[in-house]
Image (cartoon, rainbow, N blue to C red; front, side, top):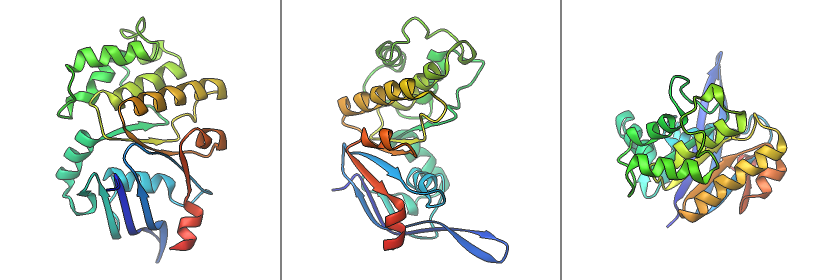
Length: 223
């Protein structure tokens, strides 16, 4: 069974009197443990699709199943709980809370979930050690470099042992060398945990690091 199964999916917005199709995907399956890059020209709905998979947005038509759960049929509260328990989210803006240390920011990823098999603090410390921040875990985001902040965000996304990691342009704020290093860390940690990764990117080199590339421009034409 596919980890993510999408059928006849459509999401539209209104600009004035006319509806604008933000995302249209006829058929897409992503297998458990697969690492998939979503590419496509601007306006094809890459970020919209990621938000639909996460249950942040609700489709106008079609279905999305994640780990057998029909996300499109869940209530808002059910989507919130599903997202907290099943998904890890990594975004370009990091969304770290400035008053908190790196360790505290990572622990926030476990607060709203039911947690993985480890004690949350122990697991958070292990992840920060793994990404080379063992000596920086008590520093606040303003005291960290951009690459270090992104590593904290990755640890926060993984601390509750999610089945699926969704990443939206996670390397956009970094130089290429730092970005490649952070991406390899994310993919390595995901592989070790058998996690499915779906990443939106405009960068061909980043897309090539994943197992499969899906061009939403082609999918949209096919639908």
